[in-house]
Amino acid sequence: MTSSGGEKELFSLRTSGAALLHVNIDLFEKRFLAQAPLNATLDALAFNLPDSYLHPSVQNQIAIMVYSALNSPTPPSARYALKLLQAYSKLVESTNSFVEDDDFMMTLAQTIAACKNLTTGDPDLLCYECYKSPNPSLLPSSAPLAIRIAPFHNDVGLRCWEAGYFLAEFFLHFPDLIKNKRVLEFGAGVGLTGLVCAGSPLLNCPSVHMTDYTPETIANMKHNVLINAEWLGEVKKDNVTVGYLDWTELAGEKSVDAVSFLKKAEVLIAADCVYDRDYIPHLVAATRKMLEEGEGKVAIFATTFRNEKTFELFISSLQSYSINYEELNVPEGGLGEKYEIFDRFYIQQRSEIRIHKFTL
Ligand SMILES: C[S@@+](CC[C@H](N)C(=O)[O-])C[C@H]1O[C@@H](n2cnc3c(N)ncnc32)[C@H](O)[C@@H]1O
Image (cartoon, rainbow, N blue to C red; front, side, top):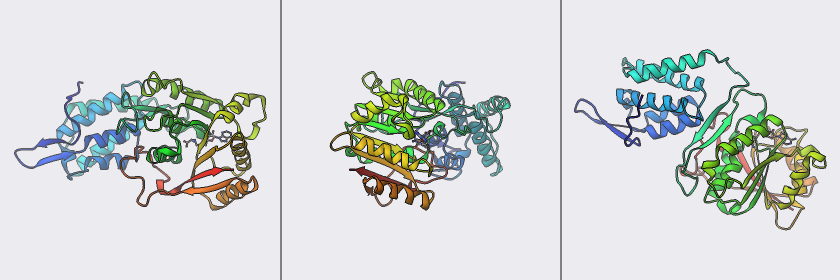
């Protein structure tokens, strides 16, 4: 199968001399590669004019896109691709039209075959979400940012959470919070937020040390740093490091490296780390330890607001450790299209995430 190439963004199709149809294939591809919620990905097709998504040329574009992604070194989940192809076929059939494109049928058959050996909800299933740069001044355009995830694993560090995406977008919108600063990240999970801090030409953080505490999460995060070497570029690829740091045992032997990064860092960041009531006092104590290691240090957390009691405990722990906190305002109406880069907002929406800045 070969790509038909050419201009994909808002390409136009002339149908039997009738209306000019517009399909936003780029938006569809962006959401597909990010493994966005299926309905959001499908919605992208009917972005401009309803029904233009039925055209055989669109079917062919979809086939090529799915086939290329599944055969790339950073494939999305085959099950996601299958669900998307099936949902698209259903959509076409619901209008009494047919999927006519041979490439589409072949890709569908291959995707079904690829899914045969997969167990539903397999914790060992690994796949990638990929993000092409929307704007080279925000994110590098040398390669897509590729993040490996294990969507069904019960280790929470093996997928990216909504607050992690949002904190990255927030920094891109308000770069002065972090620009050119040495960064330490707590509970970094798959590493997306820290990678954006280091890789973005706008943020340009000269050192980003991403930490977590389970062996699986740390190994996967290291993989994500390695696989994004081209995205980071020759100059920046060594600016990102990964290490062990458990909030509950900062005094322990295993945390010696982490403590040295705690001293060096100017900004501490954390996304979606306020959720387990037992860990909150440790998280706050570790934050205090970083802040007291020098003048002018700040911490910036993105917290998904799930449970009022948990959030109250967090605030009262901050008070008991004499940490000042300030909620940073998100502009009314959100960050705006330019900054809403990550399309995987499944459960929580951006509006449910709060950003706080902490100082002593
Ligand atoms: C909900 S995930 C958020 C991951 C990532 N920041 C994101 O936004 O996608 C919480 C992270 O905190 C880590 N974590 C939980 N308890 C921890 C502890 N005691 N010490 C260090 N990390 C911890 C988990 O392993 C996980 O990666």
